[in-house]
Length: 354
Image 1 (cartoon, rainbow, N blue to C red):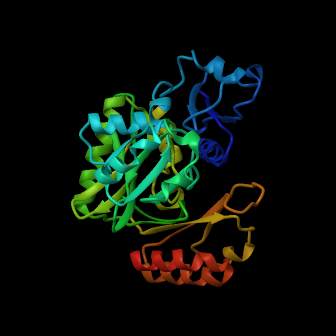
Image 2: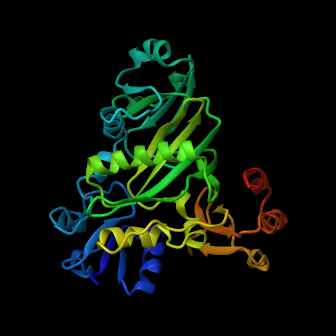
């Protein structure tokens, strides 16, 4: 089995390494600043846990590596402008948008997209960073360096947010998990719920859209697609060409996790559709110290990233799944007094979804 080098050594690289161990796949997450001679990349398959990276000695070396899967796709999807252009090219539904080129455009922007504008940096920005919400007259607060470097979207009045995690093999086969319901607060994913029997129309629409995207790009591996739920169906919000936070529940709630599925795809191993037979809940741990009391609940699976705890930083997650929804709800409710108060609303939201 060929080894796999992961460009980036954060929690996603760590979980890819963990997924490779039972299959005998050596996975090496490496920092972008690593010295090339310290990385066993020559005979490896290369993947990445991040969409964009600076030029370093290592990334210069990998730029011509024939085993770097999706190498030329990453920059196209990392730029929100070229990502949106791809979706428009494929005729896939998104919020109305345009490039924000100059401050003189604001009057026409509000006339075209309505009273609420969402500004996003073309590159970088995540978990609510590099994004702004404006109503007419408030846009003067936007930093000058955003013009030409941001897109602006219509603020969408949505009833929910869902994501689809799927994978495509080298021969073009695609497989998907059930849709995941997501709750964001301050731009950060707080809680996810996946049900084994999703809304059939939404699942079909989402699978059709994500398959079209992956096939157009010739993408190989796991990709996540985040969508808004509106009366007409689903609107694509953003794409992530990698394993994704909203798919973490698959570690304990599916027969094959998203991390194993990605390794299977890029290494050209069999790619069956993962079996999902129970409801699952994922609770992101954000700026919260580890509490071993969480483990007193029999359904709680703790995934701790061993990172320094800082405000707003993802430091781990809790996965819970069971065929008995009452037991699942009891375990969720038992977590409330064990977590800071800001988690209560996310758990209450998950209980309503189950």
